[in-house]
Length: 553
Image (cartoon, rainbow, N blue to C red; front, side, top):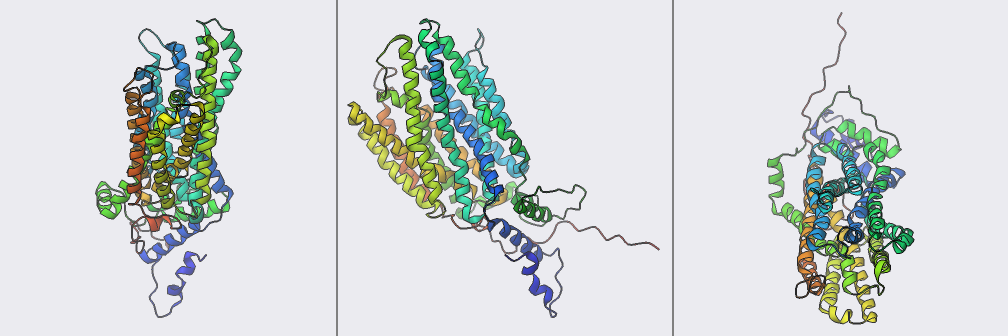
């Protein structure tokens, strides 16, 4: 690859042309392009792997904390309500609090990362998650304080931290990745979500098995004390991977694109790129003179002007609505898998007393393990293998199309698919297939595309808006599921579940049309995708270098 000195050599060597000042827009533009080319064409290195691991641990933690409530809610019901399910309002509260907090966190941290920097915000969101997770694990009840209210508060705060992880991890991994591997890097980060989901079910299974004798041998009225320890362990262990990753989050370098295009410090960005590619720690000279380049600056007026153009607004709308439609089904299923498993009679215990309590918890854990291993995790890695070969847009279109068909089968064929034990196996197969094509489909691509397709100065903010739209879908799904699932039957009958699955099919259909608004991002640099002319992107400098010091005789 030619360096910026070589790119400008024609002008430097020509005796017939006037020498171009080093701070001219032409030279600085060439320097910027050459520096970006270093990143875009870099070979996969240990640094890239480190970014994937550090960002991935965050998503592992996020998914664990979000989906552990599936099983913990059943434990809470046994402890505080002596039933196998929480009352509708309590169940809705503990499950919807996290998506509401996540929505707020995505908007807040997405904006802050574009204003203050990716590095300054990275790690703060993990601290919020750690504190809120620990707070849940030690929550209690009192005459003036209900345990559900306390958990809702902590889970809302945890959601804010989880929300910050989405735009930060997406943008950091995309801005450090080379063009050829960017999709796989971002998918590898996001795939940790599947392992977090699986780990939540596995840890719940291990805890339940470990306390088996304590549950079975406890008197009928005191086994709740055992289960009280279990749900606290299940939730509290979610803080462990976050603590492990915290140091690396706080010490990850700033992305060169932020330094270059938002701080407008081209010299420091070029230095950082060389250090990162060489595997060294970048050094910032606090006393060095900073020459700011004259490049487009993020302002409210500029934001309105950029997204006021249809060619830019349709992309933001496309990424936002696609994520909204996807999360209607993804979280509608994910946060209610225990309810669906019970609704179809999967592993319904025939025993009674404390034995029935134990069997029910074990069955829910096993069911969630099957759903994760058979559908969620394989789907992520199918996307990983093909996202930089087939493309983002085809995978998203294929996913939405097949999900429309699968949810139609699950919804309209619900009665026949749950009529007999043999038919129930077919229902589980299609349910796992839905999980597979959510992840080998829009669940991955709705995360990847917004991290690539917007200008650097708005990349994190726009990703946050897109992700927040998704969480709005999760909230709608959870509230809708909670309020609708028993319509037409008695409480706990889950009579309306089949119609909810039909509603999911409708939203998958709408996702096809929003995907058509999006361009393909595979194989293009982030600057090519920004919808901005990169020629003369840098106009010059906004500051002049200090005058040279001369000796006074």
